[in-house]
Each structure stands twice: as C-alpha cells, then as structure tokens.
Amino acid sequence: MSKKLDAFLEENLTELKDQGLYNEIDPVEGPNGAVIKIGGKDLINLSSNNYLGLATDEGLKKVAIEAIEKYGVGAGAVRTINGTLDLHVQLEEKLAEFKGTEAAISFQSGFNCNMAAISAVMDKNDAILSDQLNHASIIDGCRLSKAKIIAFKHSDMEDLRQKAKEATESGQYNKVMVITDGVFSMDGDIAKLPEIVEIAKEFDLITYVDDAHGSGVTGKGKGTVKHFGLEKEVDMQMGTLSKAVGVVGGYVAGKKQLIDWLRVRSRPFLFSTAVTPGDVAATTAAVQKIIDSTELHDKLWDNGDYLKKGLKELGFDIGDSATPITPCIIGDEKLTQQFSKRLFEEGVYAKSIVFPTVPRGTGRVRNMPTAAHTKEMLDEAIEIYAKVGKELNVIK
Ligand SMILES: *Cc1c(COP(=O)(O)O)cnc(C)c1O
Image 1 (cartoon, rainbow, N blue to C red):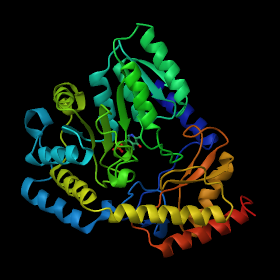
Image 2 (tube, protein in one colour; image 1 turned 135 degrees about the vertical axis):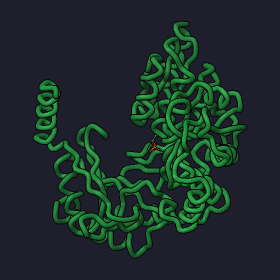
Image 3 (cartoon, rainbow, N blue to C red; image 1 turned 90 degrees about the horizontal axis):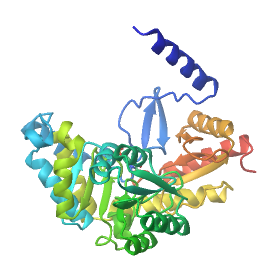
C-alpha cells in the first residue's frame, strides 16, 4: 500500500474537515418523496430534484417491475454490441417526440451524456463559449473535448456576443459552440435562449442547451427550448432523465445526422453498459406522462409559487428565481450551515449550498418544492422557517 496516498488523503481530509467543507452524507431510509426518513426521523423534503414526484409514482413502479419480469435486471452489454433493447429504441423515439426533434439518443446519466456528446462533436481545433455558471458536467465535458474553453459572464449577452465575435473572427478555430444550462439550478433563473440563438445565427455557432432542470418544469413540461419555441433553432438539446422524469439517464435530442454521429462516436455509448430494462421502461412511461398531461407540472408551479410567497412574506431573501427552485439566501457560510441544521432539527430537510458551489457570501438554503408536496406540508415548512429565521436573526 502506498505511503504517499495515505499522506495525501490524511492531509487533505483533515484540511477539509477543519474548514467545515467536508460533506457528511445522510442516507435516506425509504423513498425520496415529499417526506423522507433520515436517522429514523420524518422530514419535509425540500432538497430533491424529483420535481413531479415521478420517482415514487405507483404506475411507474409497476412498469419497471413488469419490464424486469420480461427482460431481467440488466441490459447485458454496451449499446453497440447487444445492449440495445427494443425498450431503448422506444425511449429514444419518445424523447424525440417530447423534444420536437428528428431523433434522440439516450445515455446512462446526464453527467455522462455531457461528457459523451460535447467531446464527440468538439475537438482541439474548436472553441466553446460556456456560461460561467454552467454545471460541472458541462465543464468536464468541455475539458474532455480539448477545445479552447472561453467562459462568458453569466447570462451576459454583451459579453457572449463580444467573445463570439473574437473567437470567430480570429480564424483560430474550426467550429465554435455556445453552451448553457437551460435553467440554472442554484438561482432558478432561465437562460436567455432567444438572444443566444440570435448570436449563434450571426456567428454560425453550434448551440447546446443542457436542460436538466428545465425538462418537466418549463415550457409546460417540455423544457426551456420549447418554452421559447426554439426547437428548430437549437442544435443539441441535452437533458437528464433523473430529475423531473424521476428515473435515471441522460439524452441528446436533435437532427438525425447528429444522433447518427453520436451513436458511433460517443464513448460512454460505446464502452459503458446500457441502462437497465426496468429503468428504461419506467423512463419512457414517465416521459409519456409529461407529454399527456400538465397536471403535475401545474401542481409543481402552484407549490413553488406558494412556498416563494410564504418565505418572501416572512422577509427572507429568495433571490430572483423564474422557476419553482426557491433559494433562501442567508449570506455567511457558517450561518447558512447552522440554519440548515436547525431546519433539520425542526423537521425540514433543505440543504445548505455554499462556496465553492455558489460565490462567497451568498450561502443559501435551497428549496425544491415538488408536485408531491401538499399545502399542509408547505405551511409546516414555512412555520419552521419563521421560527428558525427569527432564532438566528435572519429575519425580524
Ligand atoms: C443534474 C445535472 C446534470 C447531471 O444529470 P444526472 O442525470 O444526474 O447525471 C447535468 N447537467 C445539469 C445542468 C444538471 O443539473
């Protein structure tokens, strides 16, 4: 065993723990629904990405169980050998319908989808204009591609335009891509896609939108690209199947040729085993549910508005979210962590999010209301917020 490794781990773990940055993980002892059990204690859950409550949906559980009965628990191989079941093809057809594109390809996760798709299209002769607040998986996907990464200020269209102009006029790059989250998960703001598309047209940029937090939420459930009616303008619509869709997986939707290329050139598709039958079947059924009815979507927004109003009336700074994501900005990192801990003790699970995930001094407790919450649960959560807020002098 390596002494160097031991020394490295000891030093770095101690440092993290001393700084209060070592994240302890609390296992959930049951379904990740509107109420969760941790350490034997029931808590109102305001921390999941299970926006529509589909992760625990009874109908979807049945679909998954039936698929397991018919196909087994594993897909048996990577997609390109013989891991592609008819279930995967059905899912991809459903995703193309959902996103209004010619075709779609699915992956094992949203994270690995970004790693796969960006690097399949971009290479060292290219440049990528990336919003400063883009998700870690976008950043890693960009790095893997070896393209030049040019960050632009968050949702700053002047800065994007200037950098797009410089990159294209320099003649240094073969292709240039602009990449953005559709919905930014820390603040709940929506990307300025109409302006981004306009700039992309002017400079012939490839457009890539990661709508992990948008699908199921914006555009009446169909996502942020649909919200702006830009299905014919965005080259690559990426999304996850693990948030509002409630299961697991990722995808890219776009033109047929793009998807054909990703099928032969994205490495996780070629070298990592396909998603399990139960998951794929449940995912297709979940997407169908989102296509068929806006009932859960409407409930999600209603609950989001309700929670925002309640917290705002108490005097909390809830930022400027345009989606159900409701940050409660506390500021100081230590106070934020203490706030979240007190919420936990009182019966609300809302995780603190601090530097480096968000800028220093903007520590927050982030609330993710879902369609599965009842008004009574939200009322109780708001009451607990009032109590803890006063106790810690965050509100008067
Ligand atoms: C969560 C998230 C991902 C990763 O999706 P998983 O399916 O959980 O791997 C990618 N991009 C963004 C913007 C996300 O929020």
